[in-house]
Image (tube, helix red, strand yellow):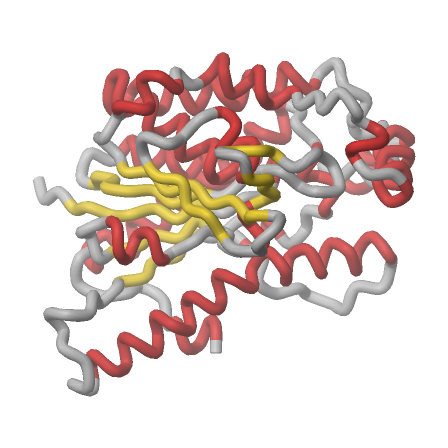
Length: 337
């Protein structure tokens, strides 16, 4: 059996990270694929840490079990919260929370007050979920999978990439810290916000910090949209999608530029690494989900996203496994230029 190694780049997206859970579950099921390194942001960072901890504890099967337990814990933690879809939401809009009274009130609250005002105790239910799901002491010494977790330094505006041996619950919460919802997370004396602003996810750590040239990007946030948004909520959703994809698009353009120079013989192929880029996405499903659904952690929704992710990964493996280690399976210029 031919074994092929890949690096994973995992986007963030709140509850939509359950889609990545499905992708990882299917990849772990295939013994032909080995993961060398993972770069993750926000929910992608949490998926990455749970994956690495599970692999270090007991291999593929344990990693799948750990991811399953983590997302079930996320759902259980949300059950007592007010952010639940209304009966009308379930009937008319599927998984969104647009007509939930609690969501509408919460959305208005976050526009008028900062998290330092409406959440002075800085409570974050994800902290307990993470600490119950990941053994951070064991993760500190785990080198089976290299980890690169991105967060945005509030003061400098620069991305910081935390690596294996530096990953704590604070690092993961910093990577997922949306500034309108949570107070900045302090790590090593510096305040951090969501890593998606500067790297969703960051690709450069996989270029410089891993040997494998194949990078598989698991896309959550749609690149395009079907129509011009007209409501305030739709406009904000589209602005967020563009913002959180912008850093990734810049890196893809840089990779395309360097690849062209290598292919033209203008750069030494031994001095510059040629990257094979792969893409797992399901835009036809993800485009229909509004920004409010990123706060919907009902188990039925998470399992729905998981199945979409599993199918997307299965389709990708069937069509592209032979290309791993040989060439990119997307046209970077067509997709990003």
